[in-house]
Length: 228
Image (tube, rainbow, N blue to C red; front, side, top):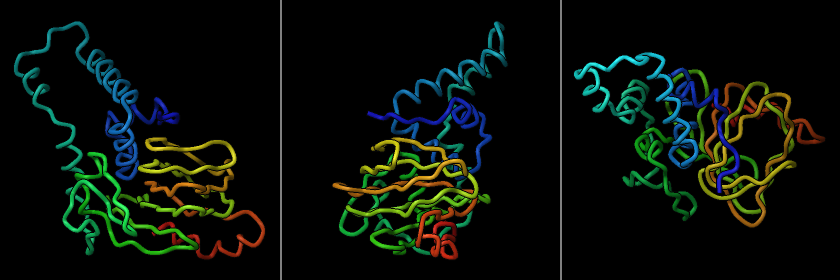
């Protein structure tokens, strides 16, 4: 069961198209995975339509255009305006991601953009990352953590939105599973770790993370590895 969701503000800006491309992808993927947020998005769309059209009857031609509107096509058109990565990591399979012998099913929003997923690179410990080229100034990236992996305590110089695509990780405050969405800023310090399961996340960042604890602070010159 999904416990953590985007705020109402995030969902509103998702509906109105006011999120950055990276945030659009993260929030859209969460909506793919979450029936509760699908209902909330539908209600926001209805409220906006009511404000626009009021009690007036919608003209037949406008209603027909609305019935034929496809939000997936709009998202695909936005993504089509961004550069293509040079490497494809899905071996021609559009609906799953393959890494270290593991196969991860991709929700619809990600599956439609599988061709934008770049090469996997190993980070510190048993961690890998793969960028997702969506344009804009924010960085969108997959982060994979094998079992028994810990990210040193850190905060964020900007904002970070993280979605659990598959698996499980913990930090000092909670446990996060498939579909859980977190939005963190510089006021939060945490130490994500996996214990008995591995975890694949999708993260949108607008600035590098900042390591805050003990010897891990020596890693700060390399924090850009998570932000490129």
